[in-house]
Length: 77
Image (cartoon, rainbow, N blue to C red; front, top):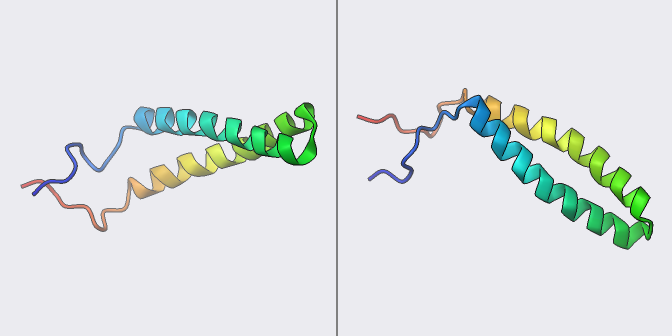
């Protein structure tokens, strides 16, 4: 029984698009939470952007690393 219909190995472009979309949502969440805590929109934007730039690069590298790990991936017959 096949659970997933796509290959376990993603194209770099797909991983990059997924990363950017996900991080945009996370920037918004981070900015809103920071704004609640610091009470200043400019500071909240700075916190949100700085934190998410680091997280975006980290997430992309993590995704690419897992594309090279075959553990737990069934090969099609």
